[in-house]
Image (cartoon, rainbow, N blue to C red; front, side, top):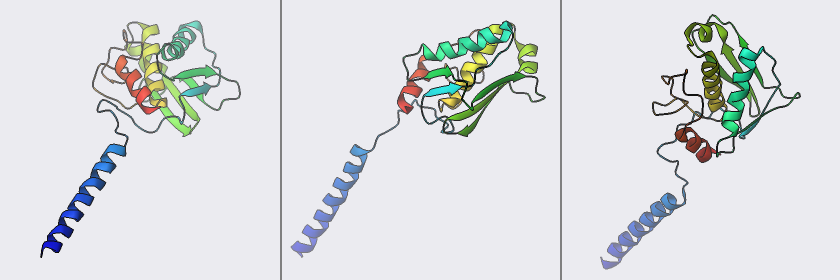
Length: 174
């Protein structure tokens, strides 16, 4: 009987060691991370150059610089060979902005001029906030309820930059 007990103890010890080994070698995602997994494969993202009047162009360009100024690998830049586009026009939908993935290095972002014009008290900030948010989706960020550009209830008239939470999530993902 002692050999059966010893065998059982050895099996339990081996099972415990295997579980501990699995736990210790698995990369855990931070508890604060909010990812959607539908973004771009890399954080350096090229966009086809866009051209709008200055009321739109300036805040749209600001959205690129706001992400590029973070301490994250996010790098948005214009490239005439890119298949990724940003389109601002009137849509009948209720959203302000919409991100769609068309591949690991391709995306479409739509800005709804109808809803933005209707609801913005600070037009430039509203456009920048909306596009910074959509760029967050391109960086694999999901909606969340914290102090974040990804919070759908944020004040778009004042929050125009990725928040520390957003930067942490991007750094953890990439």
